[in-house]
Every structure is written in structure tokens, then in C-alpha cells.
Amino acid sequence: MRKASVGIDRRLVLAGGGAALLIPSAAQAAPANALPPQPDAASRLTEERAAAAREGKHVLISFFASWCGWCTPMNAVFEDNAVRPILERHYRLVHMRVIERSVARRAQQWANADAVYHRFATAGDGLPFLVILDANGSLLSSSRSPAINENIGFPTTPADFTWFDTMFRTGAPDLSTDDLAVVRASFVRHYG
Image (cartoon, rainbow, N blue to C red; front, side, top):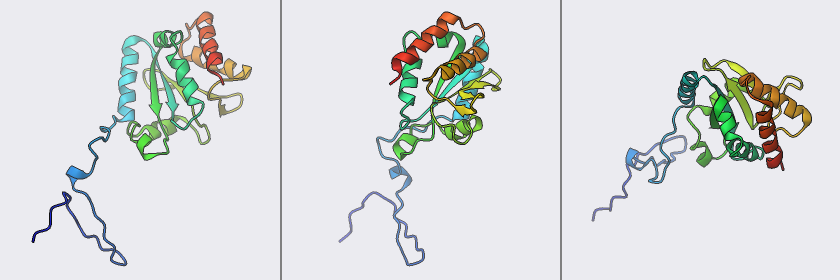
């Protein structure tokens, strides 16, 4: 009597005490509901910089993760109906998922996104972390405040807001006081 096929290639891997490991065939390696491969973060950023150059804008990268408590309100500010048009006039906005902890969430990251984050962030910067680049990829500003040499993340204090104003104006010198007031008001609405 023949054994029924179970649909996987089996290879016996002997190591140390003779343990066996089953390795699925290529056809079986990814479940049917697996996410497609993610684009490369550096390539995606190059595309955004090229678009920014064509449009006369800079690139604003918002690094975030699912486990980051402050990232949700930060994303809400950027998606706010009053704020998004202001940002889009001055920036190509890029939301980049990074340093996820679970396999499922890491599968949602762009390939090499952590490397892009670590190119700009220092140890301990945490999330959310913002970076403003010119169209050539040069760093114009970030959410790391030089006054305290730390990432301020989501602004909550007067000093945080002062740095955010400076950071946004560095990336968009023609950003009006009224536009900054709209962005600040959204931060206040989404705080806590």
C-alpha cells in the first residue's frame, strides 16, 4: 500500500542528536493569505525625493510602529482634514512603519525600513520620529530637539511646540503663522 502524498517535499536534516526538520517546498512556503513582498524603503524614498524635486517640495517622513502609543495621535494629526492640505502644499508625506516587534507587523514594513530609520535616528530616539529631507536627501530637520538633544515625539509642552514650529518652518519657510496655528490646534485636539 502506498502512502498518500502530504504535499510537501521532505528533507531529513541530521544534526547533533539526529533531529529531523521538515522544510516545505517552495510552493508551500508561504500561506495563501500571505502579504505580497513589500517595496524597498530606500527605493521608495528615492521615488518620493524625485517627486518632491518635480513639485518643488521637501520630504516629511513620519516613522511609526503599531506598538507606539504616541504614533496613533501623530498619524491622526497628519491625516486631519485641516492639516493634510497644509502639509501637502509643502511636503511629500511618507509614513514609514519601522522596528515592529511581531512577525505579522514586520511583514507590513517596507524592506529595509529599519535601516532608513537608523540612518537618521540615534539610539534612544524612539517613535514617533519625524525627518524632513530636501529633494537631494539631505537632512533639513528632525523631531530631535537640539535644546534637549532628544526626540520630542508627539509635542505636548510649549518647548515641544516651539521646536515643531522651527522644524516645520525649516522644511517650509513660507509656511504661514495661520497654517502653523492649524497644525498646533490639531496636535492639541489629538493629545490624550
